[in-house]
Length: 138
Image (cartoon, rainbow, N blue to C red):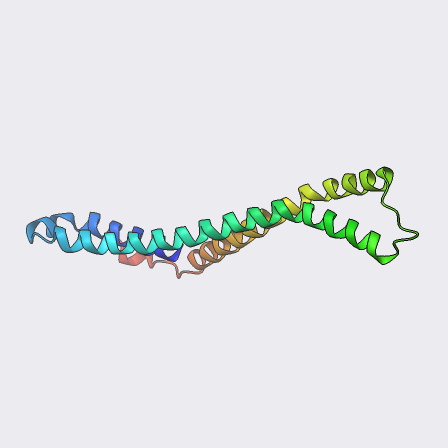
């Protein structure tokens, strides 16, 4: 978001001063600055997308791995008394599938909370700005 904010700020400055930029033929240097900021933003977005893909993979594979490890542990703890029959396996798989949806939504909830915290900080910073003196404006 920092890269995006800096790029948007630069574009806003360029649009507000477009007459001066055109007058002095500064288009290419500003295009280079915008492209450099956009490149940084795209790099960061790639990292975020890779991490998000990894997160989805882990959260999708986790219930299967938990079930597999649970069944192996159940049998290996006491091989004589703990027999993995169909009743035990199906009840366990049903319970694991019940937990699958809340576990899958957990990372999305965390990401949403982080975005909400950033938004609240920005709104708070805006509201804490000092008031304008009404005598300055005629």
